[in-house]
Figure 1 (spheres, rainbow, N blue to C red):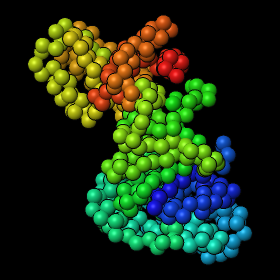
Figure 2: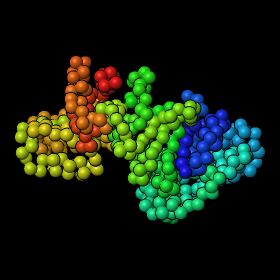
Figure 3: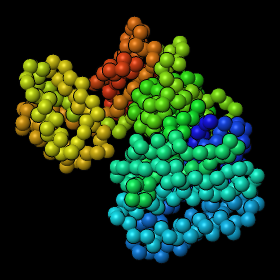
Figure 4: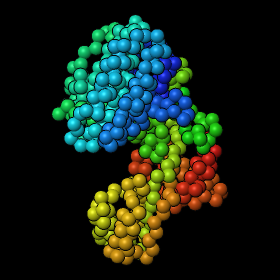
Length: 451
């Protein structure tokens, strides 16, 4: 049995859903279908999830929400009309659920937003099951509650409870049946809707693949493969046919957009292969993501990812490495301000602390720098706001002599400096820190050198 997930662009309108149904029907193993909310139909379109966010804001403000509800429902109505099916029953049911959202009392605004945002997937799964039945398929809508998916954590960053997997393993699916499950959402033990974080539908798909003991997790997107580098930086980059879980995790952390790096953890834990494929070109083989032992003839470099969301704090102090408790005092200052760090490479006299700058305000930055200056008295302290990280990742890097020089030498020849170099503990990745203004040029140089 396969678990198959479709993203928002694959479900944006009737013509796309028609492709999706053909893909599901092409393989009888595809019995568990995870769906996102309808995405954009064209460049300047609005996703249903964004419409639901507007609905939530209007409901909080006490505004009249009739127009926004009609706009949301019309997206689903157009899909039903595409298939020439009677809309009376299904649209009435979805409309009532949508209207009820603004009449419910929620424990907090976070629970309110989770309920509103999660309904894009919840309504779409019901609609797709209805359409498929209308076309003669044995399809059934199944809620995460029916599957026993219970979550903890915060309302908008939920975590699956471990005992959910036991309930999933006991869920029965008939031999000729297809179940349609909404992604992104699940329920607390109190029955409140909560949503997963970024990549929420991917997380749902991975959870179901593990819990239902799937043979394969198929993730359909709008690309025919995962590419070795961002196509916006390199025209027609090399496609990756096979990669390991840990290669995917390393690359996703540094900007690969196919998966959020936490989304595939459940399938990693269960050693279930992932096949990333294209809804618009389903016969293309796509990219297989597998346990490392299944990667044959690994490349020295599988992929290159970059991200500019970082900032760095560089400090220099002679004999830093000899001072007991130096790093501890820095960590205490960061903990006091509720700030985590991403990386902390250090040398004899130097240390660079890498932050995700989205979690730091200007006031927090100034306060942290002042306290480090006062407490530790470094000889030099510099905040680097335009900092980017490049991850060069490959299972074959571990055993390749001269891998670093093949990357560093062309960068030096191109006049690109590297304020930070860090070999990953896994020994399959090389992390390079560069100025944000140079990051795309650096990626091009590395790509030309290794590919």
